[in-house]
Every structure is written in structure tokens, then in C-alpha cells.
Image 1 (cartoon, one colour):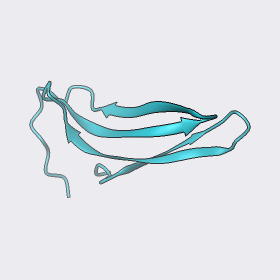
Image 2 (cartoon, one colour; image 1 turned 135 degrees about the horizontal axis):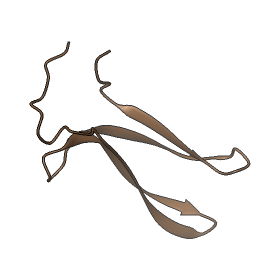
Image 3 (tube, helix red, strand yellow; image 1 turned 180 degrees about the vertical axis):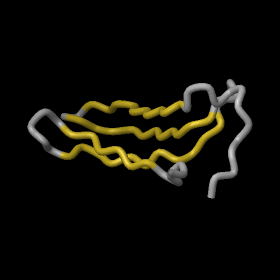
Image 4 (cartoon, one colour; image 1 turned 90 degrees about the vertical axis):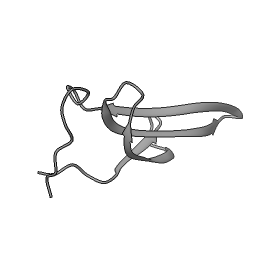
Amino acid sequence: MSAPNIIIAELKTDSGQLLSVLSATPKVFKTGSRGFYARQILEIAGKRYQVQIQLVEKGSKNKPESSDA
């Protein structure tokens, strides 16, 4: 299975109300690791929150990028 081009994350309350949908796109982090990242400002009950989602491929810092297609 090849890596996805995008990962969709839904943020919901404990009652199931949808708060937001984030699209995590591929990213090479400053450390050299690869993965996916999304960031958004979200308002909940009149307060603003910064939301970040980070998925880091374990061991990707020292591994050359594969060309699976």
C-alpha cells in the first residue's frame, strides 16, 4: 500500500458534534523526518484555539524516500 496524498481528520465533541475537518498534507519536518501536518485556528464556545495535527513516520529521518507508485 502506498502512502496517501492527504489525511482527513475530523474533530468532534464527546456528543458527536462536528467541530472542524482538517486536511493533513505531506511534510518534511526540520528534523528531516517525513509525515503529515495540519494547523488551524478553531473557535469553541467563544474561545479561540490553535489546533495542530502531526503524523511522523517512525524512522523516516534516516531512511531515503521510497518511490512506491
